[in-house]
Image 1 (cartoon, rainbow, N blue to C red):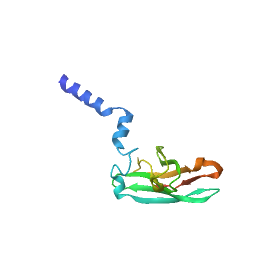
Image 2 (cartoon, rainbow, N blue to C red):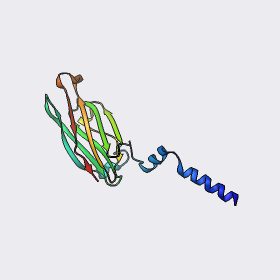
Image 3 (cartoon, one colour):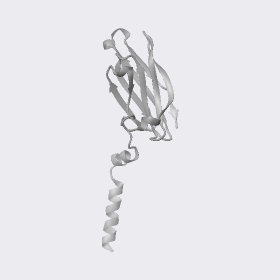
Image 4 (tube, helix red, strand yellow):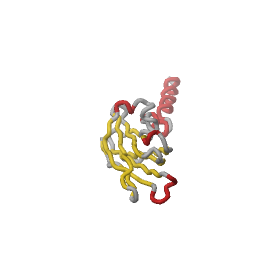
Length: 147
């Protein structure tokens, strides 16, 4: 009888784990590349907005993406290939992923994913080119999309 009780206590201890381990187990795609993971293969655009500069006007598009298969969101942009910056995705439960990108890739860039089943998510981007001097910077933010 003692042996059974000891095994049961050990199992409860293993199942409890740390909160960080529990979060990772529940959200396996968080902070992963959507295309390397395969989640991007069946994704769709759920919100779009313009990337704008006060000085130079419209400089691209920002998209909030959704993968129904992986239950994740991420942010993608299309802008000048000379731009560099940061791409963000946010979830209503307070999680955030920030991805920095360099110039190149034909101006198409995307950040990593966050799980967002049954909650709102949105994205933002901040870009600059030629050192960001003289108004050579721009921002964009999508509206919230709620699954």
